[in-house]
Image (tube, rainbow, N blue to C red; front, side):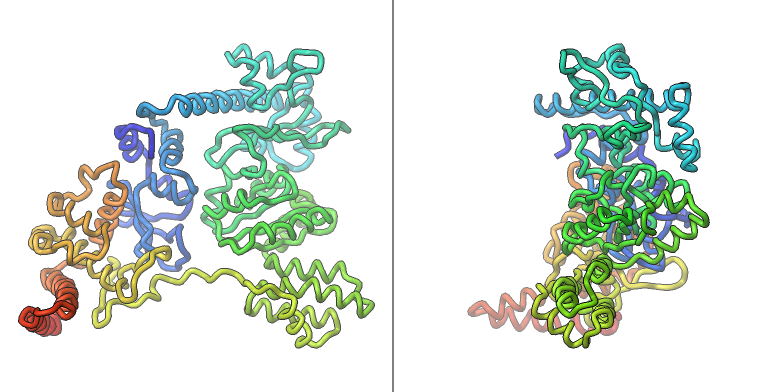
Length: 611
């Protein structure tokens, strides 16, 4: 549950520009009072996603994703409701107030806020020092020598930590931070002889931020021969190396629009790629990618391209990624870098942009890369060496499942090992562990409508299309999807034509509806049919979401009294079917059963005349 006041939540809903928020993930174009575009929640070629800025909510007629600005941020950034509210409040400068909360939780929130403020002040100091100090001249020359522009460096807040032992310590204390706070933020450490001193000195600093742009810590590169070459903020309550990705704050929107993330190894790789236009790049800040980092990317991308260094450590990291990815939703690919070069090196060379584009465009599935790595490292000159290579490759091939990629790779392995493909298949079946990639999400249009009916909604362009089916995550009984569509169609038409719809809202009963959400919506519409969005309760997201969704459908639903009547009769027939089933199973209900069957026959005739 959120600890924000109801007034705060409403202020965020009203003050957050939903078009601005959604536009970071998909291109929108105005269409009357609405904005339309390709859905950021599922693949589609024809826009079925709609945003109503006046009412502050969105809806997709293809996958049925819908809600307000808070819900959108929750879904796209995998945030809890309170975190989404706080993120939007920060972004749009909305002051938040909270209900009385647990004292310990309040103290932790206050403490983490102080640490974040200390890190932000340090980041601003380091950045200013890089550009204004003569001591940082060599660092500036190094960065500009790597063909990184001042604009790019400033965009990412790159800075320089001076050589002094207590520059940040003294400035932090002057700003009101106590030493334990600066130490908890990872900015100072205790000295062996007492006192404290700065963690980062004589180093180029790269602020590490979370997806909301809040400073968590720093990565720092030494100048000259100082070791270690790279040094990160120590793990703390704020900073966990394996839970964040460098550049995610700037890359999340481009990743979502492209449906693809490019994962590199270092800070300067990210800067170079963004400068070259590949702004969907992030870095793992090391050679390993973690389940938490992949989960973070799942909120934005459908596939991840690993573009790590081409040395042995980079290759090993990409193979480890296969185990980390497991059977997750992300498609994992590998872009092979030239030997001895990282992405920044490639971009800095002759025809760098074209070479990098070719490498990313030629990315192969991670299992393909794995098998080819096995073959590249194998002793292919002797039968035992080829046997060992086949033993290693077989489980990888088996885990791919029966795909065209697997079939082509089997032939490739057979050719490299000078073996018959049937031998590869046999060994694969013996040594493989089965599995395969997860099933692809089925298109909503593949669901059939209710038997004997044609349920369509207008598109506003003279054409019609099926009303959206249940979302991919929903579980429905066989045949119930059509009934649910009929229910929502009738309720949407009642909203679209409230004068006519009022009669049907009065005639509908809970027995006509198959979901708790639609029953809630019906109760709400009995009192709010003319303006269903007015005064929606802030503490009932199920009701608010259903009413918003039905209102979106109403904008596209051709509402006539004839179509409402047919829809109502179909729902009434289903209600009768339930009563007939109950009467059939009851003893002594023969007369009631006959009456119900006659009523059903009458309805059947009316429906046939009306459809």
